[in-house]
Amino acid sequence: MNEFKATFLGTGTSQGIPVIACNCEVCLSDNPKDKRLRTSLMLTIDGRNIVIDTGPDFRQQMLREQVQTLDAVLFTHEHKDHISGMDDIRAFNFRAKIPMEIYASDLVEIGLKREFHYVFGDFNYPGIPQVNLNRIGDEPFTVLGEKIIPINVLHYKLPVKAFRVRDFSYVTDANFIADEEMEKLKGTKYLVVNALRKTEHISHFNLEQALELIETIGPEKAYLTHLSHLMGKEEDVSKELPKNVVIAHDGLAINLNEV
Image (cartoon, rainbow, N blue to C red; front, side, top):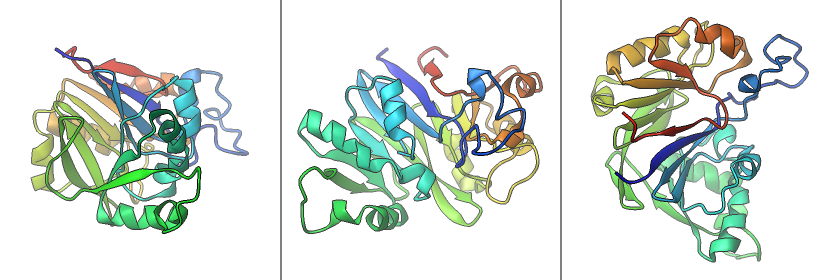
């Protein structure tokens, strides 16, 4: 089977870990797995790369993973910690000499045009990012020949897109999934889901809710992402999890052909 890999570029919430000016045991931890950049993921399919969300740490993530080429960007929603690094795709424009293919819902398009008005304006200033905006809705679409199934989830009241590619599903920034959308996740072998902390939150699954979702979907392997420092230290929380559930960490790469 062809190459199909996922790399966790970042696994932290909007503040990242360590949090500025915080002296809790998680933020002071010397365990590299407790250091978390803002949440993002890269899929590699036969040597071609798709990134899901370009947060404020996008540049740092690309340098750390030594990414030389990027073929497409999918956006889940328009919050700053998921879009604000888009300006740095211009490095890939310069190398490839072509616009970047980006995929966004109508709401994300509005957010991108507000945040990066100079990218979408009439005056094509030299050196700005070059993008080809592909609007996505509720229907499956194709990227690099791969079928992408968008899944509608809610981040409190904000619509967010989760994505399924083959038997891999990625759900970030959500705390509600309607029954008809849950059906799109059934049969997933690898499930990535946000789990912010142990106590309940207005717009994210907490640990208990994330584990309930995982049990409902029944993947062979599940990964928790978008963690805050309030979740606790990685080595402690890991001991509480079912055998098929792993706390993802920055830089973790998984071969999606293994199961």
